[in-house]
Length: 141
Image (tube, one colour):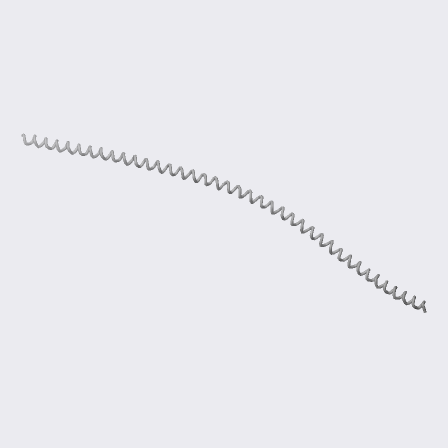
């Protein structure tokens, strides 16, 4: 009777052992699959990090190029503004010179006109005296 009990107990234990062994095999398969997934995910993470790093470096390089272009354009803008100021100063100086020349010309023209009026008036006066002399001579005859 005890032997039957032991054999039955042995069979129960063997069945549990086989069940556990089968579970262990399933666990090992699942562990291998999960480990494979983890490995692939880690590789993907590293690839993304490398791509991000490369993209970051590319973006930094592009930013440096654009910063250089901006600096060059800003320098050009400053040169243009300085030149614009110089041109404005030159134009102002020329404007003042033109005003002075026009003022001088107007003064000279006024002096010339006064002189011409004076000459014309003297000429008219001489003509009047000459005419008067001719009349006197004519009357005297």
